[in-house]
Amino acid sequence: MKQIDELRLESDLGYRFEYLSEFIGLGEADIAAIHGAAEHLAPLVTSLVDAVYDKLFQYDATKRHFVPQQSGYTGDVPGSLDELTQDHEMIQFRKQHLGRYLERLVTRPYDGQMVEYLDLVGKIHTPKAGSKELNVPLVQMNALMGFVSDALISTIAGLGLDRDTEVATLRAFNKLLWVQNDLITRHYQA
Image (cartoon, rainbow, N blue to C red):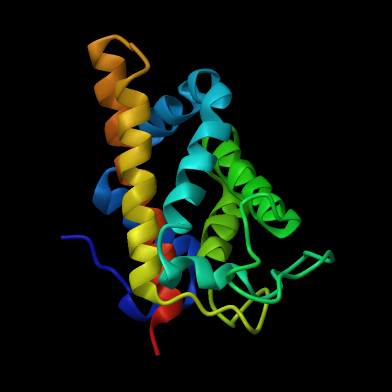
């Protein structure tokens, strides 16, 4: 039986990522499958991002989090929820961030820098990093991750990959998104 230092899981991000990856079974073959999907997914990133924002704009509980000024954004800030459209430059700024996130998932090595980035994805949706005014509730983050997961599954299933590659790619993204979800939820613990 492997011994796990549970206190270290809370204080050592690399250790936590290694543990989660080992437990879930996210390994080199999975990373290769994720990277192998890059050429197929790259042309679809814009439509995936648009689908995510279409969904986020359907609910006041998710759309409202785009009214406060976003970290790193220096342009015009909408005065109200009604003024916020998908054409607003702040939403375009956020869409670029999501597009880069999806690009990083399929192109970057899963090293310490990438693990820190995945962790920051969770942290920036809380007042702990980025904008102090931004505090997306965990239920909204879980809803978003579920939607992103389903959108990726649907997209991958529609790529016309051979069955073995399709299954390997679907399983790899599923494992990765579970790790990502943990690195989000950890920032919501008191």
